[in-house]
Length: 554
Image 1: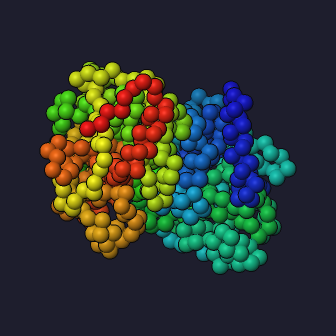
Image 2: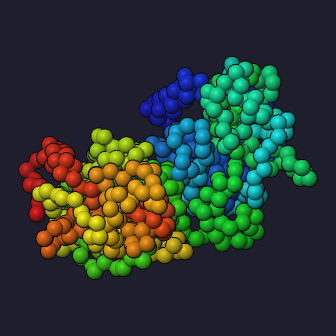
């Protein structure tokens, strides 16, 4: 049963959407579907309450709207498959936890690019007659005005009745061309209906979908096909069932199809059931998406140190494995007996739910020898962190107790001051990521890799990042001799260790932040430079919240 706080959270978020006039929770003018006739339909839930719809597109993958993440990212999330009635539990139903959220990398909390993948903690039982995969189209062709479509969901059935439908509903809508939808009588370009969107409804506004149905499918008739096919995802609208304010749907374009294939590792969406079952058993890269967009700026494509070598046991004793649901998601550095330094994108997205932990002293993640586990009681992202520009991308994690320092667990002392790292300097990065682009399994053992610092000017040039994003003085660009990052999101938050000036001993110089792809030429990794200003901030936070423990420096 939901606590009052949990109920308040869900109600408050829904209220915010309603106040903005962007969403509500109904399929207006709908009718019951035949029980289990839409076996691909998914109920995305937070604390056992239906929040959004979704579509099962592979045994371990659900397609939905990226905006749904706002409603579930701070709560325990799961999906229910094989349901017709949400109240009456069927023996054939299957409930599975969400392992990670993966919004489209260019989604910016608007209606554009409102598409997301959810990786499930385990494969759905697609041998169950009430749980089936809906194949995605192999290509995308724009819809003409007047095409008949259907929308499906568990939303309300009346504007006056705020109660959600217990049973799965369906309504018929008609495609409206973008020019009309952007006209003064309709949305008046507020919001702008882009080429990534589809407008659909009816002239009188008697049939519509809203927030509770967000993420559900838009199924449309195609020439020469006897059945409707999925062409879009329910995104948003202006109010519920208002004339000249049709529903807005994300059109599943070629670019989205390519992105989906890349993330889930599928070449053809029409694999046989046997192939799908086999692929579902392949361990996918560990990362909560959404998080993924936020961490990597490129979706959750990979989590590897490509071409890395095993670290000698004990030499990476300062390394921290930041974990969610017992899976490694980010790296970090123990800089104090009770504090771990990592990236802000890790802290912001992985610690909102307060369910994460830090593991110290691990060389092999599967083996517990010498390791210590901690809860994080106080994640502290830099107060000026900007996820759009990746400026100030660093954070501190306060552990629930001081670590026991020994041969397995040691503190990496902070430098007293730092200087700019010269172009061409060889540095080292560490992490538990993959070691091969073609192998999705992350490494069990800690790996390290040598990278070369690339000048800020080069990194901002047209052949590299072209100021998207701008590489600032607070960042370090580093990669291999072809300008490839060789690190990815699972290594975010880990240390960049460089030899600085005349010092023979290497020092902590940066924090792994983000990259564009894992193995892309002229797209090196971007690290947060451990500047003197950041050192002052770190010392201030630690001294202010830790009693009688000295901050070690070298």
